[in-house]
Length: 121
Image 1 (cartoon, one colour):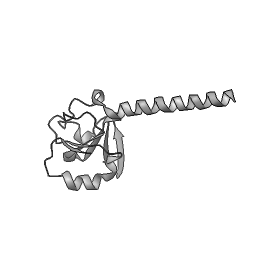
Image 2 (cartoon, one colour):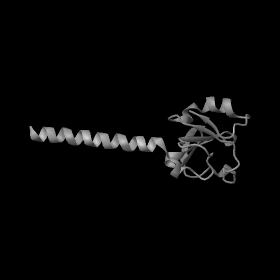
Image 3 (cartoon, helix red, strand yellow):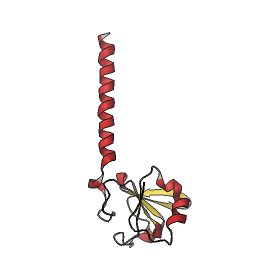
Image 4 (cartoon, one colour):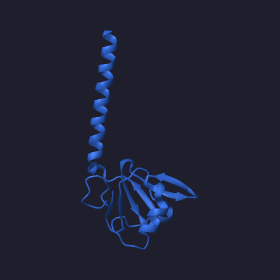
C-alpha cells in the first residue's frame, strides 16, 4: 500500500512540475525570438513572411516553406531566398498551432496587403 501511495505521489508531483514548466514556456519565449522578429510581443509561435510564402517557427528556430509540394523544415531559408532581408520584411505573427497548415488562408489574407507586425491570436 505504501508503494502505491508513493507511486501516486511521484506521478502527481511529476505532472505538476511538467504543467508548471509548460505554462512558463507558453507565457514568454522572448529569449529565443530572432533579432528580426517584430517587437512588442511577449510570445511568438510563428512569424509568417508573406512576400516569400515562408513561416518561421520560433520555438524550434526553423523556417517552414514548400519545396516540391511538401513542407520543408530548415534552419535556413531556401537558396532562392538566402539574400532576403528579414529585418525589413513584412511580418505577420500567428500564434496558433501548425500555422503553416492554414497557408491557403494566410496567403489570401496577407499577400499583396502590407501588414507589418500584425498579430493574429
